[in-house]
View 1 (cartoon, rainbow, N blue to C red):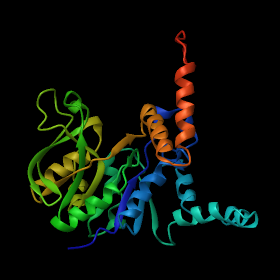
View 2: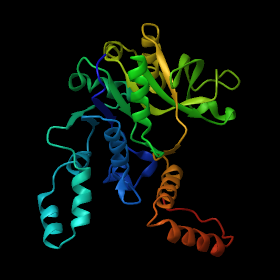
View 3: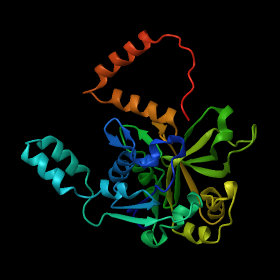
View 4: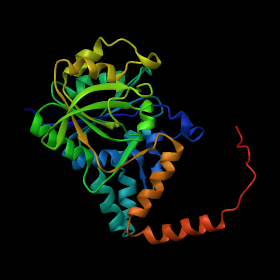
Length: 301
């Protein structure tokens, strides 16, 4: 069984829900507390033992590549000013030479197409796929626990968590079969099922470990919902050839692709930090105390 060494990060999206900010700043570089969103996802992959980070980019995403590069002038300035703690922190987050690769998704044809664009960099081995909009808050990396399940089963792994049964129509939902090791057999996958037809309330939360056979399927995959090449459609075909297992993630997930989820993530991660917790609690209490009913104002468009 081959080790999961590589992770793919599809970062070519336009981030239209954050306009006008994302006219000049990739949505993946918006900061939650003091780190870009993409840094949280890469840190999760690193904790899981990932050795090679593959970014599928698009136009105006060069700043992501710069973020993971060495900035000699900054490092030198911090060293000269004696800011050793900040310098050490940046160096710990810095990937080693040769650990990052970047490829372009030159046309916006969906998540399945973005994954397919990474085929030559992944090669003939299993890989992790992490959707950068979704960041996790848990003591142990979600992906690390998925890798442990993969090492027990040797097959495709999808992380899932519970949602309100009334909201299953918003997500990709899996059917739950027998428990296997620290996970369970997936008996089916449905993308945004109609009300009352979902096989469970377990939704796919943006973390996958997939076998390389998915690339051959994606190569011939027809466009699906939204006139895009859908990863779920390809996984349904792969499911007929190989088992899929689910890892039931028990932590918190924040959808930083939406303004509301992004704000929630900032509050949650600031409260999680011992050096910020008390001040943030006081700030939130003051904000709620001082809140007054106001006439709804129209935002400029």
